[in-house]
Amino acid sequence: MTGCQAGPPDRQAVPGPRERILVIRLSALGDFILALPAMAAIRRHHPVSHITLLTSASLAELGGKSGWFDRIEIDDRPRWLNVPGWLRLRRRLRAGRYDRVYDLQAQDRTALYFRLFWPGKRPEWSGIARGASHPHRDPQRGRMHALDIHAAQLRIAGIETIPAPDLGWIDDPALVGLDLPERFALLVPGAAAHRPAKRWPIDLYAALGRRLVDRGITPVIVGSESERVLADRIRATCPEARDLTGRTPLLAIGGLARRAVAAIGNDTGPMHLAAMVGCRSVVLFSADSNPDRAAPRGANVTILGCDDLADLPVDEVASALNL
Image (tube, rainbow, N blue to C red):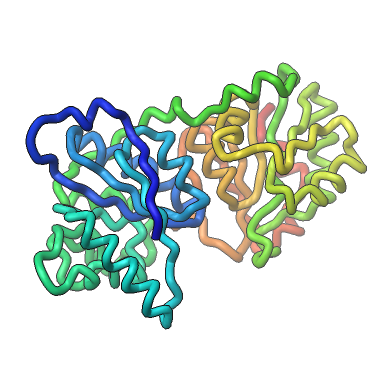
């Protein structure tokens, strides 16, 4: 667990002791994106408190750019038998002198973090940890959507509402240099490599790309460097598509989504990001993941589900775009 500073300097000027808050939300990206409204609500509820975010290294920049946190801490997530790693984590947590912790991860690992404050005074704790001052013990929690879990958990801790956050900071000025076409749609053909069943077949993405081109819309493919092979296969059928795989950090994907006419993709983090910034989004779910618990939400979001995504026809996806 290492640390880096982040946050608006004006909060440092508040006189007297400031309440110290810790927010815990680790990976994955989609889960982190779904927690953004809760994070914003916590900052709104504690406007002058010193708030630290404990997160994964890959999400530190995104958390820091939000402006909601005074400090970002990186959780190295020691393995269960790594005793020195757990002792280092314990020292860092106790050194934070936190008055309250919002555990938005709320899994067995982070519930254990509550116990690392023993012996001595433990902070107020919002989460599922045994002995928490503000426990969320709904027996239906395992079936609830992440947004509903956060709302219920924060309500117990005194935060009554979670308004839609201002996400104007999710953008990237470097996009100006990409010379993007006036009308384009994002294609997000990747997903977790170890869960191939979450991916709509790449030839169907290619066929959809051709449909978009026929409507005067340029497909723009985004993803990690490792997903460039997917972009190559799409462009073999649809050479008009633009390949931005490996060139789009998270803030850039958000900026692209703001400018796109639509985004189409699998159940993966970039689609959560596109939906969260308001982009017209069509998200494809197989039986490998549960949209009732983790699908993006919003007036501009359409969820298409099929046990085997190979059975989801291009016509149905194209129709859902309504372009």
